[in-house]
Image 1 (cartoon, rainbow, N blue to C red):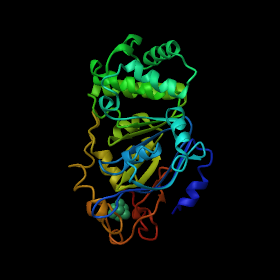
Image 2: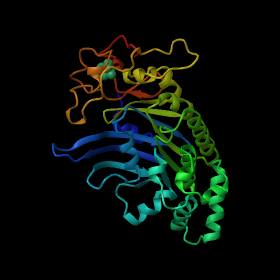
Image 3: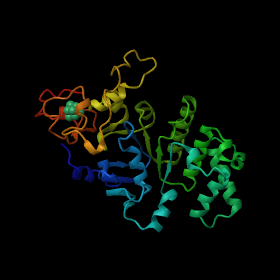
Image 4: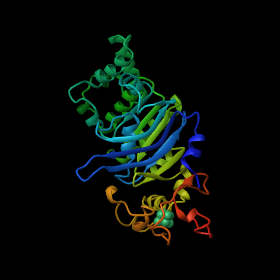
Length: 341
Ligand code: SF4
């Protein structure tokens, strides 16, 4: 069993260290816990995938990392970026950190860009805000280079967002996110709205840029099959918590947590006759965060639930794949057989 403190010790030197992060949104019926005690690290040049169904808290985490949540969200814990806590830094410092040290790409580029401003002008604006010595000509030249780097002709800088296709807009958003050469890029479902071919192109672009620039990358999606292609490590979230983390391929092929097993089996694999490992996908729906089930929050949906599950909230246990999973099946006292999920 691993305590949060021990995992903190193991992470010294990370580009990003998130410690015991909890986030609740206000509602008339009381606070709604969206994220509950999440701890993880991202090293320089590492790709971490955050996976889970809608509403599990993964996008809330992405917003919290750069303090983009609504002001009434209640946030506790630490978000250490290069050792500095983003959650407590002064606003002037936060403005400098955004874009310069970490930036974010959202799902719908159309909603993230100003529809009445040319794409190039939007990128120049970000550059000049952070590099005030950059003049207009230098800024435009930099925009051209950035657009070419993401596979768009420099002349597209003169286009308005609606003149670009969905994939081109997402490329432009990536160019904008990289404009100030951050060391950490957060990609929140950047390919979900794209068709499969364009999705593959954007993913391969992200991977290429990540390698070239040695970026730390957090990639968020519900699709484990996308993460296994892209990431070094994967953290699987359920009901506001990380329930499993470990090497990407092992989490996909040999998950230790029954939820990851169901998630992994929910995606068809072309050419794999055994792809229907979880027939019918995951049963049931994610729980209401205000009324979480007792014990293990996954127990009402879990095909492997056993006696202690409705009463015991599982801590993280070391798993066979070298990572951790919050499942009582891994407790040798409760489950002497040590059965894998
Ligand atoms: Fe399933 Fe029990 Fe493990 Fe929770 S603790 S995932 S209910 S087996």
